[in-house]
Image (cartoon, rainbow, N blue to C red; front, side):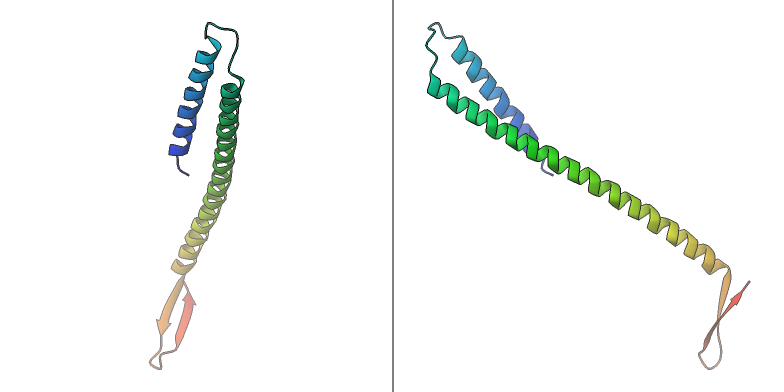
Length: 103
């Protein structure tokens, strides 16, 4: 996941917040409705992006946990196979046949 998306979203939120505060602190009581509407649309866009990022993080975490579990299972199988292999002795006959003998 690209963490620059998160950084960019927070920068956009700060810019929008500053713009809204500036608009609201203007001396006249007639706020520019069009400007406020644009700012609200931008906030919606940033909110959607953050929601998308949150979902990506959730999926990545879920995938990581699954891969970690599978890795541990594979590790356990390898250890079991190594233990099994040390209990058996492999021999070749003169006719190239392979036989296994338990120790």
